[in-house]
Amino acid sequence: MATLKELLSQKQALDAQIELTRKTERADAIAKVQSLMAEYGLSVSDLTAKRVAKPTSAKGGKVAAKYRNTATGDAWSGRGLQPKWLKAALASGRKLTDFAV
Image 1 (cartoon, rainbow, N blue to C red):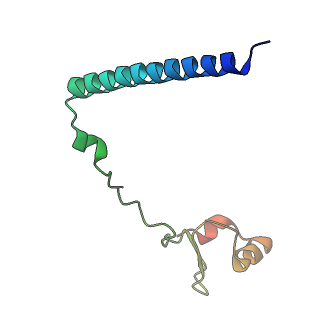
Image 2 (spheres, rainbow, N blue to C red; image 1 turned 45 degrees about the horizontal axis):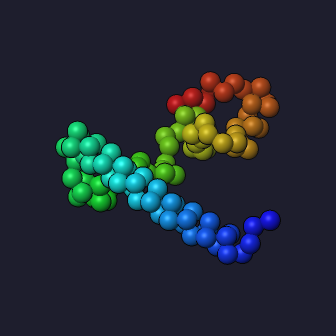
């Protein structure tokens, strides 16, 4: 079994080796990034520039009616549940195409 002194010595050697490897890999990464920046003509400002999001279409906006009850003026866009007036008319034997706008 190793003594405390030997283990601490090994730990110190490993810490030195870890630090050397970290520096080497970091230098390699920097070189790779610089190479890619040169290849694509990028600058540091390109990397730090904030992207502006494109405005999205209005959510929850009004949708044109696809079905209308000409007697009452009630309308339905065709989205969501069928309204009560339409269910009642369909139950009485009328067809959905009767209400198409």
